[in-house]
Amino acid sequence: MQLPDYNFLSAPLWLVTALHIVTLTLHFLAMDFVVGGLIAVLWGGFTDRWNNPVVQKFIKLFPSALAATVTFGVAPLLLAQLVYHRQVYSASIVSGWFWLLIVPAVIIGYYFLYGPSFGKGSGSRKGTYLLLAMLTFVYVSLVYSSVFSLAENPDQYKALYAGNQSGWVLNPDGGG
Image (cartoon, rainbow, N blue to C red; front, side, top):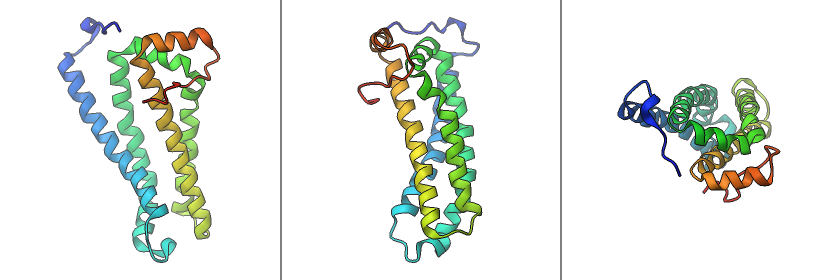
């Protein structure tokens, strides 16, 4: 793999790297609150789950936490594309349609978090909405893992693109 050319960066590489680490850490903290909170709310051992004040507090915080997750996730994505633009761009072309579907998936996930937050519906409906929200975030995670692991293997995405140029290809190694 050819290392990136750092001569075009408008800031020192150490600064770009430090900003990437800080913003990615903030993104992970917000993301962990959302995903971990969803797991705790959906599968935790709460008595009278949907009327429990802790569960209600989590449900009210999920939309704001997702907004923080998205906001804190933009900077590390842009910083990674700044340094590894050729690799990330090429890998995202192979999985282009999956990559483009991330935005609608997050919007749908937002909807499913806002539903229980504002709604006074039944517990099973709230649980269904939260589970569907979680599934959209799992989708986003799988696509990001696939694309960024492909970016580390130019020979692999070159072979994948040569074999199928539809844009409907994920990393056959599952992003690992």
